[in-house]
Amino acid sequence: MINQLKIILSIIPEKFRKKLPFFVSLSFLNLLLDLISIAYLIPVFLLLIDYKMVLEKASEFIQISESNIPLIVVLFIVSFIVKNLIQIRINTYQSHFIFNIATKLSSKFLNNFLTKNYLDFQKKNTAKSIQNIKIVGLDFSNHILLSINTFLTEGIVVFIILGIGIYFYLKLTLIVLGIFSLAFIFLIFQRKKKIIAINDSLKSSYHEVTSQLINIIQGFLELKSLNKELHFYKKFNKSVHHFNNQYAKLEIYKKSNNKYLEILMVVGLTFVVLFLIQAQNSTISNVFVISFIAGSALKLLPSINKIIVSYTNFQSFKYTIDILSEVVNLNKNTTIINTPLKKNFILKDVSFQYSSKKRIIDNVNLTILKGEVIGISGDSGTGKTTFVNIIMNLQKPQKGAVFIDDFKICNEHNLFGIINYLPQNSFIFEGSIIDNITLGEGEKNIDFKKIHKLSEILELDSIIKSEEKLYLDINSLKISGGQKQRIALLRSLYHNFDILILDEATNQLDEKLEERILNYLVELKKEGKTIIMISHNPKMKKISDKYYVLKDRKLVMIK
Image (tube, rainbow, N blue to C red; front, side, top):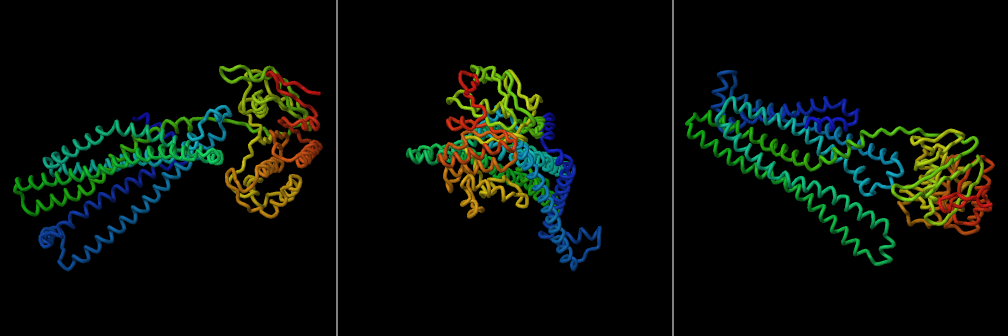
């Protein structure tokens, strides 16, 4: 358990770890105020039952007259209100503190996702990644950290109340303690296996729900065209029903605890009354004892219930500890290469294969000079995408090396300081057209003159000028496939680069527009830009300084 607490502590971001003592101090202040509220209840009960007897007993210690009772009651009410207002502020601060940790952990997950090795990215399940980024940090903060805090504070409340009870009413308290202890042990251990089973089921079913939803969104048109909406609707319904059913079971376990404890309270108070009758104590003594037991029960029942619920939450969500401990301990040191290309980009004796598969690229050599246009073609499955990934240092060759101006590129080097890559599938995100081009540049820094020049070349000027604020959705249907491709190309050309890699960047365009774009790319040579084009289009050969075909694991130059 101690090792687990150390791991939990290491997961909490350092900025928040430093504030933990203050957070815990506020929890103890909250605890103290709760205990004070119990002390209020005893005199209130006594006053309601027989205020004259209370005044008579109290006059032995302090001078209180009957006329002072309204003032005393008002003071009680005011202090009670102040106490609760302070507790509201404490709870507000603690809630913000906990959920800011969740936000930070989600950011950590996203950063890990964005900086991961490309091979790891390819292996990672999309639904699992979404779950980790969106949910795991929140579950950890809400159900692990808050559960530990509840264990600590509510456990002390129970300990103090029982301590007072044992000191003043040993026999009676031991009877009540015995009843509650048996019930607590029964509730915890009787449900432990079921809670673990629900926890495992929740994890897998959440992943399944997310996967089914992604499938439906991404395959929307094809599902409709093949009349398969009902099939996927049923699959999603089955997954979400199972997930909600498991979640409902967990909530039932949590809420039913309180009812079991209420039964125990009634049984316990009955034993207390019978005990007092048998003991034949004085009326005032009996009233005081019942007041103490009733006040204690009003606090003990919620406290014990919170402890049981916290235990349930901790057991149900402790999977987050293992996931987060892996993420926070990852040390990713990358160096961004942003020194402009001066002479050449060289691949020397490069070979690559995926594990347990034959080589895709074997002993390939390529020299690209600054300001050249390079064309690369090849049949599907010959390794063009892998070859481009090696150029961008997204995948490391098993043999050979990559050099930029005689500088050897290593694993930790990030080449996107000088390389701009436009993949075959155009990326459009949720935002305006201008946002999709500038990728979040502040309006003062946007070069609108450059955007309008490029939009004329790409025949996007009408849509850019008239609908700059047009809001696009992910994979937006508000624009055509060709417009998406041109917006993505405009984005690549707008941002500065030394090397531009285009993967089938004009395959959805008509011949006239394609030729116009290719001519513009040739013009970029004069500015010292280096362009690598991946395409089956024979026109690429005409504008390329060097043209290659990937065939039989080799890069063959075509003259």
